[in-house]
Image (cartoon, rainbow, N blue to C red; front, side, top):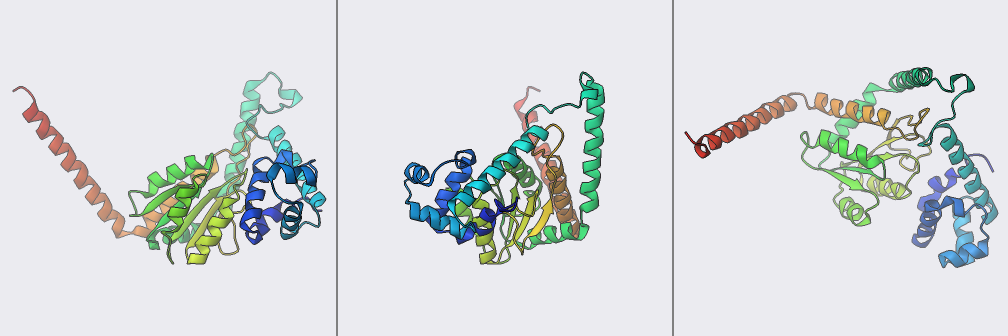
Length: 299
């Protein structure tokens, strides 16, 4: 099996039955437990027949349950490598920099600068404006994500809320919210998916359903192997690894700022009108507050 065979799960997840999807979600929630477990033991723990598990393996593109376990082992080794190189754990400092916080911090700054340059060099402004038009043309915009990405969801919601009428934040862990939000989708609506490792497999179902309804999908993620990415999605890739942290939010936050800026630019004179009305509201509130204070006070 190739090194990226674990991505078979992302690519073929939509081919599974509901029961098989539930089983895969369970495995992905505890990937370390799959690496060396026997077929019999997994069947017992998940209350699933061995035949169902084997059929699931076939649908995911694995020759056998053994091949599935190998893919999970390779995946876990890759995760451990990321943990050692760039995660929430302290980095392993080069011997020459041991005890020199200043030199190490300078190195971190240089690394961040290089990553930032690569990020901006990779940006295609026309795609940002296209993402902005998708937002403005939609009657409903859903912003979807989970875990740490919810910080980004809330940030984008605050950026877009004053600009468009119907934008909703959809935390993917809340299946009731996911289902009720997807029911609102119509042709021409827009779904923005923010997804970084560890990937959440519900994302694949969300984007597939969105495209089924005729909605446009914008994916903000770190890799073409992300379940948020489809052949029709508009994709923006952000490198979230740093020397100290894994899944840093710096580049994704910049990307969201750029998309929000694109929305303002594409609004044209409508934005000028919005600013005028906003100032009118602020003036009204301030004037009323001063009037209320005058009559409530002692004079």
